[in-house]
Length: 252
DNA sequence: GCGACAG
DNA sequence: ATCTTGTCGC
Image (cartoon, rainbow, N blue to C red):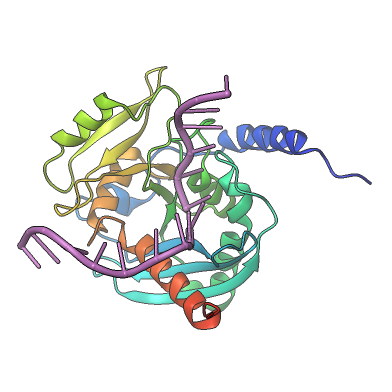
């Protein structure tokens, strides 16, 4: 048996994304999503991976569940994992999804009553080269409503990080204001959101699964104490803290 | 060859 | 993702 050349692996991944893309539900499927105050929403999840400096393989996979609307910690799980897939822009899901699904599975087995009603993902959803980013991937494979929130703009489908984009950002004055990210074909793939009053740098929100874009943007804003929505921020903080405690930097 | 490149 | 201290501002 010989390993497939990297280019063959990428071709396989592309076809897998195109196949799973058909299963994405871009609409609100839950009652709480249609309520002005999200009445009925009680648990929001966040996932993230943090890495040891200079180590491409070992990472801490983190899942947190926060209460809504108070955003207090209900559950957290940190697990060291060994990644196998490399990071390739557009294929982040093949690197991270397996370990995020495992975390959700552990929660289901140990504390099923704490399963989140929606999960925030560090990365894009439909705002992606083939409209199937990490948030869609995790959403479809888990069946849980998901939202993608990227901290940096991915130049995709005719959306450019140019002066026009910068001027659109400059118009956003207060938390909650946004503008659409429109593909060359005219579809709104996501929105740039000023997530709080304090930060002028927007986050990029897109549909993962089982939620509409407008609901995803509104929910993201309602989960922001700082620029990054609290579920993702907590997952990031806690996974890095785990690494700091368990893998202290080597001193010279 | 040059630029882009979620995390 | 991570490399990295101080610094300006509320």
